[in-house]
Length: 152
Image (cartoon, rainbow, N blue to C red):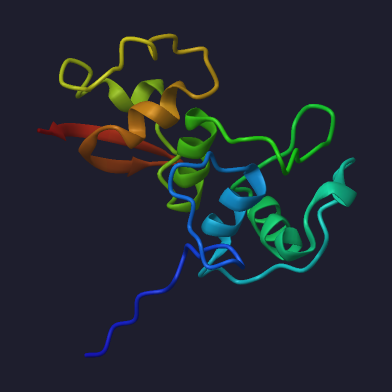
């Protein structure tokens, strides 16, 4: 059987990768969108004119797929660096690992890894980070994933 590995990162036109540079939201959108069905239906952001031409289809794709969202003012903020929490949330949505809720953790709550600065259940990113930082077995109960045990 022949397998194919898709490219999800590219460099810059000058032939560099810039591994120590921070990553912007439009650059991260490009990484997340590669390998997905491209959606050209334009997302209507208040700052759409600031999204680079090369990034338009990537941004449209991640927005229309629900993997990335704009801010409360309807802006995408393409040149803003993405935070670690937003990157985790985006990856979780892209890989369908975003269905962990409070009830999901009941069977495994003593074994889960919780970071010392991610303890507030009411923070929007809490369940994304908990889900992404633990390896676990689960059952689908309705829309939620109910964890049955956590792996070391």
